Length: 310
Image 1: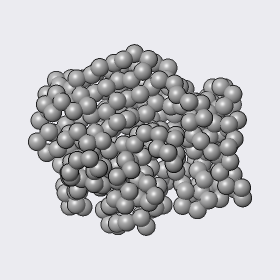
Image 2: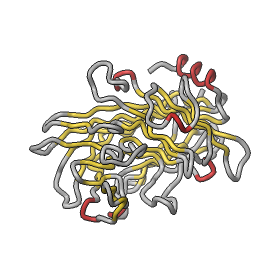
Image 3: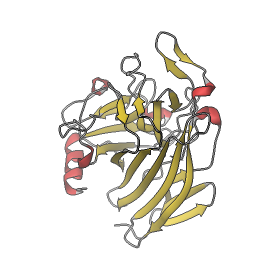
Image 4: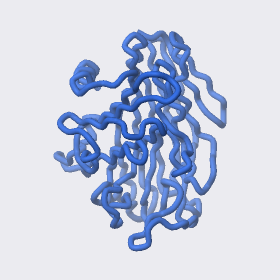
């Protein structure tokens, strides 16, 4: 197993996390402000496998606001904290800069790596519409664990607790809740590298793009690299408390996933129906992303998840 991770903090810019055995930078957590049109917000890029291959994209020419792995809100009470053009039913995607908001870094409460290969980044953020009003506070926690150079895999967990600071409800939606079919993207969003187009999509009981809009506790995406030989697999999983199917009375989640014309995954919390967050209430979601070298089969994924409980 891995020894302690190395952490370099370029204050005001990014935190870079390196696995010392391989010398690979696992990711950079970038929190500097960026272009207003792209709905500035912190993100992880590049994210890499333990062999050093990148598994995220940054500002691709089709969607400049797609940046690695990031928390998003495509439709939030009439505002766009996703970036770029805003979807309007019957008119398509329009350039409406007055709708584009932001998520701003406030402070890190903790940045810590231990000697067992684990890492914690605990951050406070604020969410804003275009005019800068405070709409929400977020407590975010990004963690690394189960770093295993011999097996070629490591795990990232992402927790977000978003509290409504308005005097009225916050309404989380997506293009699908506003009339566009199969475009339920919002929430935690991954954009894969261009080489991952046409990659393999799997859940525990289904395979292929038809998984779009479905429910499942986990979803895996495998792609083949450009520039270096081999494949990588990313496994996205709901934490048990997420109640992704809505069986315990919380808002259900559905997978947004594409492998054409680009690779993208989001465990959307407002795919088919809006999620309404009352004033003072908190929306909490936790996920893990397993980053692995190789094209994992379904049984390998199930075995890994069973052997690495939450």
